[in-house]
Length: 224
Image 1 (cartoon, rainbow, N blue to C red):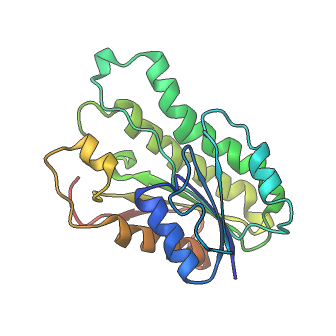
Image 2 (tube, rainbow, N blue to C red):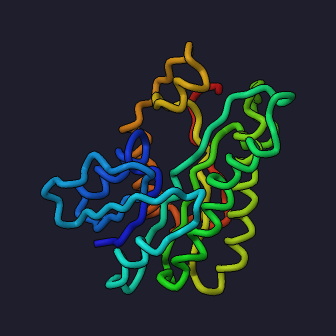
């Protein structure tokens, strides 16, 4: 039984990843800004906590996992999104997006690094928009650049932690039917469901580090 933390777990891919992990018998702590829809259900291996990653205050998480001797996998699924023309995007807009998508990821990783053991896997969820040379779209300068920064950050962390046996990988996701996709591309209907991708992300978090470290894998069967 693995001990796993998932951020952005109240809906979409994060929620589906949590559901799959629980079905597989793993112990899960779900982090989200709002209460998880699974809260209050009879799931003995499930705990959740409301944290805004932009605030970088993890006291409530520390209290929740104080009895854990390890964290086997940390899935950084939470993400902030903005669709706004570059000329209208303020410094505050950029900071707001990066505070969640990059700084929050870094701070949470630092906050629980004492729980990492040899074989732990830290998985970042990026976007195809963060891949150099991929199709880019107007209005996503803050969002897509933050996802590119996440990829580079994890490549660096893979080097920093490799002697400790802790792996860092990133999945760059393509179009998935989620609220975020509907917000970004209202007319686009993806052929991948949140449930499909949630299962894929969860399985990769459990096993991907066996063959990969410091890598970004493009998970997309369509453009964007």
